[in-house]
Amino acid sequence: MAMRDLGERLNPHAPASANITARLEGWKKKKRTLEATKNISIQSARWKTSIVTRGETIEKRIARRQDAFLRAIHELATMTAELFRGRSNNLMMSTHGLDHEKHVTGF
Image 1 (tube, rainbow, N blue to C red):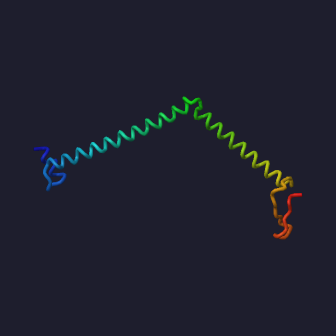
Image 2 (cartoon, rainbow, N blue to C red):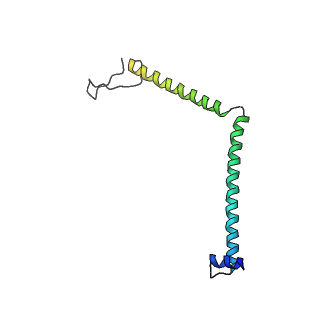
Image 3 (cartoon, rainbow, N blue to C red):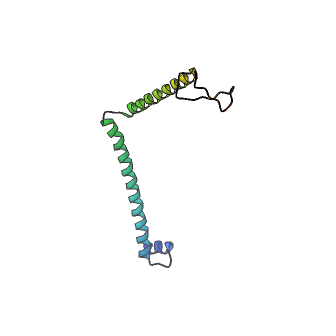
């Protein structure tokens, strides 16, 4: 009697067994979704441990990228300093004191 009451509350026009079956299917679907989410988190944990097992920890990877970034910044600063000292032959620089059509090469 209780199952029939549950089915009638969900959809009073459908037979009780159809409503209960629909409810069970919904629970199964939710369970599959939760299991898939759990599998994704396990895979990401495996990815993190695979970095460590290859001999490169996350800290080493960050340090390596920071070193590369600092080298690039240093190179950019050196090029900028050479430009303003007038040592770069390849770059043309317009100055405010001259017409826009005249350019100086830095010499």
